[in-house]
Image 1 (tube, helix red, strand yellow):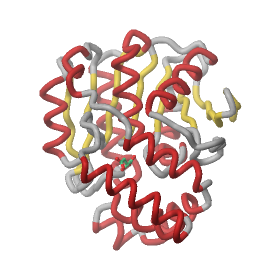
Image 2 (image 1 turned 90 degrees about the vertical axis):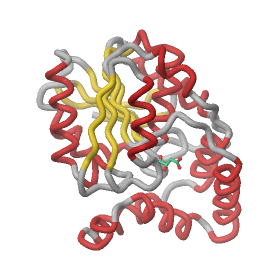
Image 3 (image 1 turned 30 degrees about the vertical axis):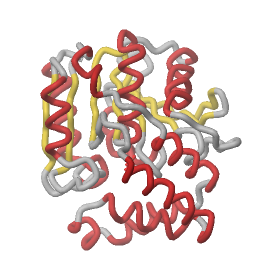
Length: 264
Ligand code: MLT
């Protein structure tokens, strides 16, 4: 079922009476990147996913986004759906949003699943890359940027063996509003570091990372793992940055084991 909350497209499925898993996607994707997880966990959980403002079917507006405004949107969804004690699951940019949400309001969640993400802010080189991305979109339109950015997110195996799937993902993201995509780049560029508060996270936290993730590689995620008290780390074989798409069976098993172990 699709619901519009504060202009955002929010998707609900599964058992309404059950605990909720709230999925926050990465950049420049939309809620459909979690389809395999939603299909699996809707069997016995309530699954909520949404399109981050500016991406998918959520409007870009003026594109003046910050990580803080993305967290405000997340909070609005929690309030509107009266969600407390849900399991927060974010990948990459969805992980940045999740880490800031945990800093601000971890009492609203019972557990967290952080996939292929990091707590550091962009360094100067990273900021310049974002700026070059914006410049490129202004000059060439969105498609060349999304093609290169998305291709870089996947492992070589995925790129070789699942060409059609990759092409579909690229085509979908190329249709997004460029204002929204650039707004997301600015929000990531200007986000702050959440590393110093990782030690304050005291809910069970599962960290998932693709063994071939070059954007947020396993050593980066292992650092986060060492700083969170109740953390578990699972490295996913045969996957790059987009673990839930690249190796969904293994990701789903890791999530299922984590939920069972922590009686969630
Ligand atoms: C993502 O997958 O959300 C992006 O790679 C995050 C980023 O560019 O920092």
